[in-house]
Amino acid sequence: MTPRRYDAVVVAHERVTEDVVLVRVQAPDLPAWQPGDHADLELAPGLVRQYSLCGTPGDDGVWTFAVLLRPDGAGGSRHVHDTLAVGAEVRVAGPKAMFALEDAEHHLLLAGGIGVTPILTMAEHLASQSKPFHLVYVGSTSSRMPFLDRVAALGDAVMIVDRSQTPDFTLAQALELAPASALVYACGPDRMISELSGLVTGGRLRTESFDPAGSPVETDGSFEVQFGLDGPVRQVPDGTPMLDVLLDAGADIIWSCREGTCGSCETPLLKGEADHRDDILTPDEKQAQTAVFPCVSRALCDRLVLDLPAPPALVES
Image 1 (cartoon, one colour):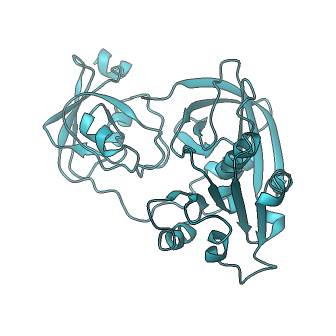
Image 2 (cartoon, rainbow, N blue to C red):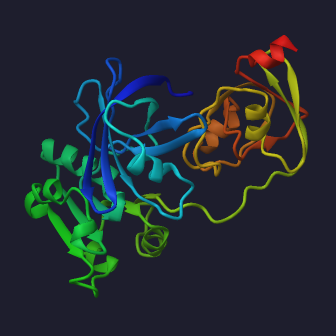
């Protein structure tokens, strides 16, 4: 289901480390969220980024994001750091449960750098429920590790690793802190996730990476897309992403990653068989053919009918 959008106002913009700012947005109708949830932050037309929600789930009408500055990124984090300010009007969408916390007898939570944002909310939730867990928070140096005070407040269940002081620490050591049956949640850079994939067995690992994907999106084969059951039709040429065709036609679609990983551009599918190439839908959801991510997906038929209103420019023509 496509997440609802909300018009919000920035009510806080605070620097918490040398390269991380905390942003709070407020709107009277913002819904509650759960630990691990994400939301889209639309900074300007065509500039949408997805961030973990990292405040308190019970904060009515307030969502909180922590944004790491990426000097080599596409401009979203730079906009948040240098342009966004208290009082700015933004649009948000969500929340999205793409990294949900499952029940288990014991949880081992591993955070690398800015990956602490979803992991911390999980730890605080487990602590509030008096459920057993361990949290290991690893960073390059303490001056660049946000939320150290909140992490430390969780007490003996926490290990904080400053690699500038303990360079020999390994993920294998972290895994020794919890029972072998513990469900392991990890959010961090790709190299961390890759290493854990070789260490954690038995389907106990749940991961999220904040590194951008390195492989290009395949855009083979041409097909048609239709706006609604009776709306206009547009051709999607071989070599062109479906999302580009929809945006060029004037479709109002939120997008961010263009890699099929963030979930921002989810679009209801009314008819047709999509070639799902995202990393979000489950096998059952893909087989159901009720939603598609146009940033990466193609078609296994001649035409996909999307539950999108026809853009005014197409209606007028």
